[in-house]
Image (cartoon, rainbow, N blue to C red; front, side, top):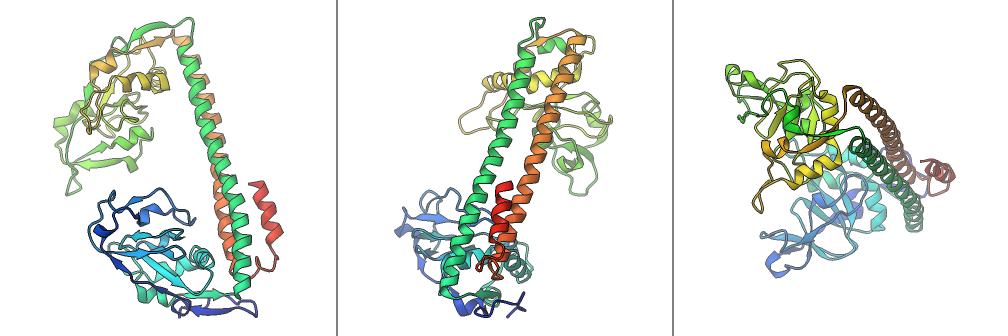
Length: 416
């Protein structure tokens, strides 16, 4: 057995996994059970023990023999054990070959929560096979330690732990709602500022450009690492122009001289999913840093008419994005597309240069306020994640069971 991680209370003991639990084998033909639920690792949220939306055996197109599971069994993802994906089944079904259905002599939820601790995950990841797709085999799983508390203590730990975690989950749901409200407030405020200016004149986008719009270049990634740096769509989707969202493509530089980015270039996604087509971002950076791919359209603002930052703000509003999406064309089942004419004929509000500067300044203030709020929410999420791990650690060292940290954690939860 792997070395015991810490000393336990007198009435507890360390056991090998296979002393208290075992991987069950119940192979079933999926064709005989088309309507049963099918659970795979992607149906389980990492580190929380939460079941995500799933489908049936038939809907997932399962054809090979799979393990059947029943209510009360623990389901554990054996691939990428560092992701800590484990639940207790509340129904019968079939599980992916990447899952272990587990019977246990312990309270199943007690074992589940132990398998979600940092310590168990660290040990499981240490036992994983050194393969392209890391996984823990049955032998490695069986050797892992489990802290075994008396049966009544196990039930009490689960009761206290799930009470705390339910309140923590509610706090995290409120955080997610706050982040969504911040996004909605910022978007609504910016749309109102841009589209409700009494002094604005309405101009087609094509009349605000210094040169004809340009589609990018489609090229395969370079196999040798030599070639030209090109953006990926993610750069525009996230509005972030970094090396993380580029690739080196196999193309001769002289063939793409007119595709190098310049500071102030606007890039519009001409093809993507229905909610992302028409997404716009503005590039601020050195000239010649990268080219852009064929699925993007480049716009260059005419300085005498409009500032690039103002035009970017207009095209990034929800109203402009909605109008562009409405112009998208595409056959059923294919990616919707917009063309240069759809963008060029879009009518947008334009102020004089002083008015544009005021809008840019006000929008910058809104974006900074939104970013500050989101950063605070993300800090609270990290604190909640740390608290979740601390609660699990306390639970299996005996402190939570005897109440030594119970009130402390309840107070921390109230502050999240």
